[in-house]
Length: 144
Image 1 (cartoon, rainbow, N blue to C red):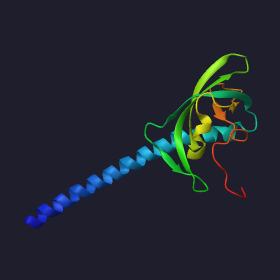
Image 2: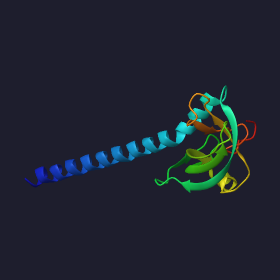
Image 3: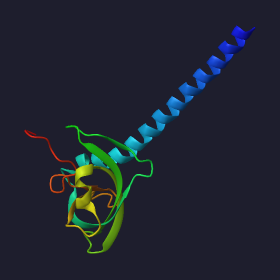
Image 4: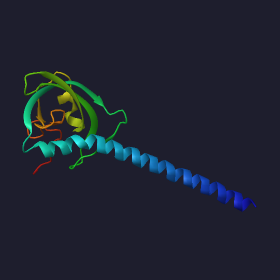
């Protein structure tokens, strides 16, 4: 009888651990998708995006604390970067970009720092990405 109870408890605990692991994995994947989207948008806009220049107005770490390793071992931190820019019509705008930035470069994006180069989708002005050719978000490794 005791064996049956212990196996029942073991089964319930095991299911709880598996469920918790599933929740952690799904939250991590959602965070990654949200902060990787800006990078995918930049890749799409490289060819025909409208170049703009902006200035950082705010920098906030992700509420979830998400970060990951970069291609050469650096730590990329998920942030919400507020930028102010003038659009193609000469109208001042502000946007918040969710992106991943090398921890060693975060200070370069503090409010009021030098210009941030942006690319804007000419078909959909609400689509905006950081132009990594002119405003790098990671420190590249030697030989890259």
